[in-house]
Length: 180
Image 1 (cartoon, helix red, strand yellow):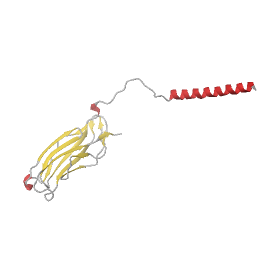
Image 2 (tube, one colour):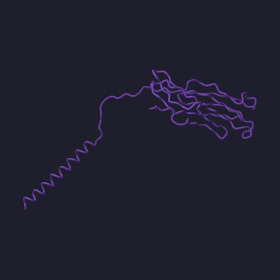
Image 3 (cartoon, one colour):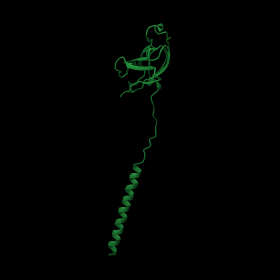
Image 4 (cartoon, one colour):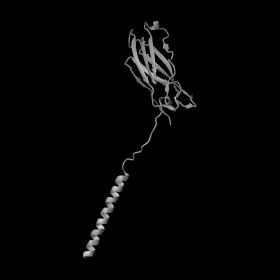
């Protein structure tokens, strides 16, 4: 019996050592693999989606005297953010057509609706595409598409805001991402 007990104990020790070896082997293999080397990212020239030029606005009514108000307007377009500063008479509106182009080397597409900031209860802003936004891509460095949008800023009519010009500072941001 002594021999049988020794064999049994030896077998238990061998099984336990095998389990420990498997656990250590698994832990070793499951660790994070670290690679040494160099990587590069794209340069800023690879991503160049931006507005083309400052647009000429369309105003309604065509003259400020029609509502005894004053139109003042300025626009600042940088990268993909447009800042519009206007003073509108009640019932008046101003509309800009803006163009987005891709001068970079990566394909780009509009990601969701443009974000509008600065609206008040008297000033509303709508951004609508002139055509359905498309994927802007480059072929040999040549732009292969332009997205066009209309940005319209409205001041409520005379009944809502009698005889007072309203200042609006609207910020519109377009979010383009790399297309696949």
